[in-house]
Image 1 (cartoon, rainbow over the protein chains, first blue to last red):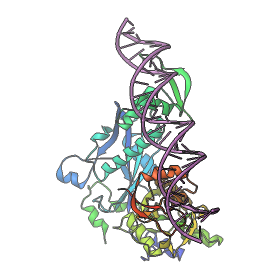
Image 2 (image 1 turned 180 degrees about the vertical axis):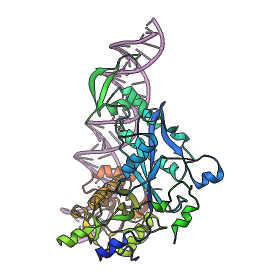
Image 3 (image 1 turned 60 degrees about the horizontal axis):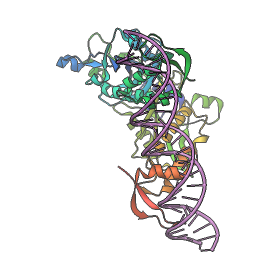
Image 4 (image 1 turned 90 degrees about the vertical axis):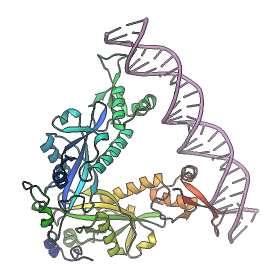
Amino acid sequence: MCDNCQVTNNLDSHRKRLTDYPRPSVAVDTAVLTVHDDQLCVALVPAQTARRLATGPALQRLPGTFVHEGETLADAVRRSLADKAGIRGLSPVQLQVFDAPGRDDRGWVMSVAHIVVVPHQALADVAVVPVSAAKGLAFDHDQIVELALARLRLDYTETPDPARLLGDEFTLLALQRLHESVAGERLMRDTFRRGMERKLEPTGQLQTGTVGKPARLFRRLL
Amino acid sequence: MCDNCQVTNNLDSHRKRLTDYPRPSVAVDTAVLTVHDDQLCVALVPAQTARRLATGPALQRLPGTFVHEGETLADAVRRSLADKAGIRGLSPVQLQVFDAPGRDDRGWVMSVAHIVVVPHQALADVAVVPVSAAKGLAFDHDQIVELALARLRLDYTETPDPARLLGDEFTLLALQRLHESVAGERLMRDTFRRGMERKLEPTGQLQTGTVGKPARLFRRLL
DNA sequence: CGAATAGTGTCTCTCAGACACTATTAT
DNA sequence: ATAATAGTGTCTGAGAGACACTATTCG
């Protein structure tokens, strides 16, 4: 047993040692997802890595930052996105730690992957690409996008617009279009309506100004 | 070893070096789960905290350790369990990072919670208590147990003994008893058999030496 | 034999998938 | 009127829940 870690016998000696051995840098990297033109998209920023400097072609990466002392991971996510895109009021969800030694050629860096979902308008200043085109990213960010995608799709199979991209009131058609964009495939109208209508309540109001029979507006239950 | 050197080579000059940031200590804490006497149990070790020194009553915690440089989180989990219980050949599954500032009164410590499932015989040297009795643990370890429980139960609803507690061959009754222990409740025989038999194949052999009609032995598919 | 467990059959209810039909609006 | 969308009805097949029945072993 390493005696840096065998610390439980004497608290005072351990207090000294906590900062005495090597510690990793801890970063957060965030898959910022949105829907634009019926496409599920992810925000990317330019990467500044040794590989880019050496080989030329511009690498892209997910926005991220190192965690500061006294800050939670979620706070670090919010800070990095506020700095890079001016987005606020987010609720980051933690996905997984990426800890492979050598994943970052700058040294010992662990990254805690997060997911955040925002309306497309909030991403005016950021490059956004369809998730299908987000390949070949820096570090292990391809994997993070994969994970985020799987998580988001799972959430959207169970709950009507859990990320609240549509606001509080919406029609069933708008909801279905959104869920189809997230899923990346068409959904059956009957099954979708039956499944979702149980988790919604009608507001009593109708949508106006559209072609066809006016649709009822719904609100999320609970 | 000097990680400053390997860092400075690759960094842009205008960037801060990795080691210029304050870095957290990163620990792993593991919910070691097992089934004993039809009860789902978790391994606990004595905790040595400031609170314990102040108030007297013995606190318990999940086994854990700080992560070493050049080591993955899974390796750290294996090392901590090999040291404390002599267990080997594990496949730790990562659950979640606990990062609340102040969660550890020794300083800035993040803990990556893990789950590991082992046969009860492997835990001879460790104190094991039913999960229902694992309350009031040190740090945020109550939450980790909760999470681990939810995860394990989810896995066991979908797959026959995913942790392979029963070995490679078993009867449907043994499998059902195990799944009931994990779930903490009785399961319906019909539904359980129908659901599981699709994911199993009969070995062609029968169990011997038991009361009643001899049961077929099954093996996991795939 | 009776107790205990294994394995099969079958009825009902729910729900997904699929299709058809009616209703209401804009152009 | 026609296109387009909203909403409802209904048939079918798969599967869960529930119960009953037969089969095989031990003591």
